[in-house]
Image (tube, rainbow, N blue to C red; front, top):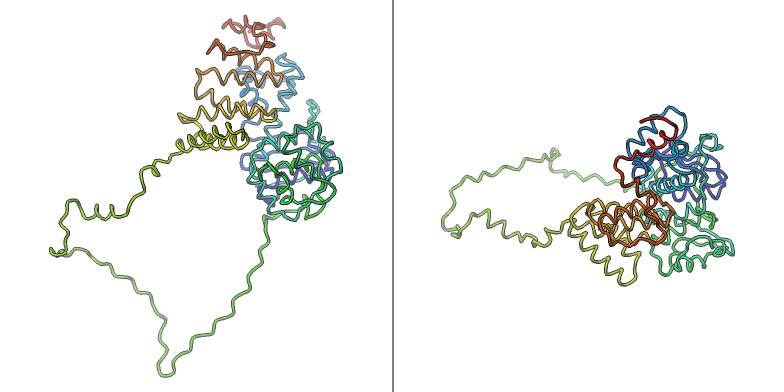
Length: 467
């Protein structure tokens, strides 16, 4: 596996592969595991990962769709089918529900791939379909997949660093690019920035200067997402070479010319050459002498203590600046930004707050606010659920996180998950509002019976088997 040219190179690799119409498999060695991206005619068709938590079984456990016992029974079955096929064959979910969950997992894998540094990579040219099993066919919508994952990934700093290193890159767009992006959820600020793109080559710095209302990271993600989904084409600058080993030299540094040789010091004629000086050790001074009484300061307290007091230690407020306190200040600033209608900046403050203090006493509020405002954007649904789950773990007897999770699942069309979340919220607080089109009576008898068998038990009972 070749060494990566730069740790933040993946967004550029995705754009290059799509522009070249590549066929093959991109193997990425990252600091949390190995991921494989399968490409066909320049479009990403499937992803695989051995990173912790990015397998379908772990995903189903996290989402509460399967319990551990049911998952172990599925995996213990000797039938040679993928887990995605087994959950359909055993009646645990429909093909449509399975595919929705698989696409959600694929989005998570891609987002994590964009966020983690690339340590090594290998491009295996050829038909990627040969490396995929034929028992599970799932095709990704390349355009919408790239748009949502690039917008949701938290890699602003690395992306800006990549674009700064490649300041010779220029992109061109077709004349009617804005009309071609009508199927994507562009914000007014993004649409305004895209309106400046056309056949004339544009670099990142110029594009950012024209993108009024977009931060540097947002402008970078928009530019790279458009390249990845085919809205832009790289027309100037050194392209990436996938088949050649790349050495991590992001910037060329010219070696400084060697200094001129120093002339040897002249030796006096009237004196013999002296030997080279030898560094003599500094003698240690022993302090076991009798102090003079006339030089002593007769004040209470030891002399060492007096010397320490003269160093003027920092005030207690600075020493008490703990991560929990910083998180609280960031949350307060985020709430002020929300009142001003600056949601994007507020979300960044909340993300920093939960990063600094993810499980402290004051972490519930930023997690809850983060989940509530992430769910506004459909592309952030997965991260909204993660934030709300973190809030529910911190305050398990509070109904609001469960009600908001139910609303997210209801919008995404996951009826079973939505009902389970709303039932949990009503159990904690009967006054929680539930959308009128959510029928909680359906399946309530089974949920209320603690002796009712699980999914696998009911399925075996239909076949005449016994548990």
